[in-house]
Amino acid sequence: MTAPKTAIIAGRGVLPGLLADRLERDGAAFVIAELAGFPMENRAGRPVETFAVEGLALLFDRLQALAVTQVIFAGAVARTRLDPTKIDPKTAQLLPKILPALQQGDDATLRAVISLFEEAGFAVLGVEAVAPDLVPQAGVLGTVQPGTADEQDAARAATIVELLGAADVGQGAVVAQGLCLAVESLPGTDAMLRWVRDVAGAMRPDANGAKGVLYKAPKPGQERRVDLPAIGPDTVIAADAAGLAGIVIEAGGVMLLDPDATLAEAEARGLFIWARTP
Image 1 (tube, rainbow, N blue to C red):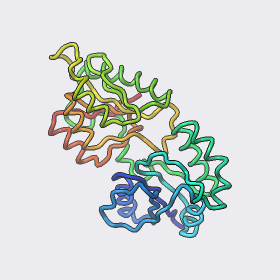
Image 2: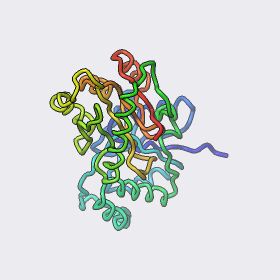
Image 3: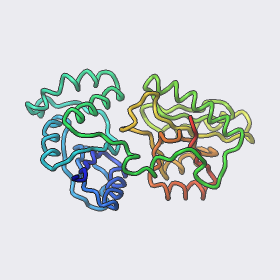
Image 4: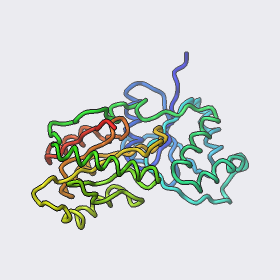
């Protein structure tokens, strides 16, 4: 049986390169298809196939010509306006499935895109299929342990994030001493942590009490093959600057980018990273 060939559908950030490293290490055949306007961090200088959403059907044809049988989505992208002048006739036939989803939010859009890839004959993989080490399972990931107050703050934050996710708002929150100091919205995790650092951190009732936690988790019912939340070394640095005790992620639902560097940063700063069972 011929081994499957994978296409990494790439956006911004380090994740596409990390997945390419894993596939290359395992001797697996792959290509990188990069969405125009969202360049990946291509430290290895690997060749990429560039595509536009307006030419999605042309991408399908190209991947089929390259004998690709499965795809994996990696990297950050933002919703952009379609340019009608750039839509080819084959892609125009896909618009009745794309346009309604664009009006319904990110989750609906992602589900529609996955459906189109599957209808074109490609299997859609999640990150854990290629790099399971990037999606930690339950447990404290380093030597720094959360305390009882941290566990209570994590439980409170998990409830808040579940409600946020159901409204398709965000995937993170900061809770300290039972109080929600901030929630993640469109500006993202970094902006939320800057707010805690500059403004909300002073709102803790007891200056000597629990410092608080950052909690991240997927949205309820989220399509987990794409757009999983992620943390990395920069998240640890920002959480430390915000005066937090640690980071809690949903076990099996959040990516740990550059695991060695992320854990080393947490250890050096005395922060815990806990993959919590939902």
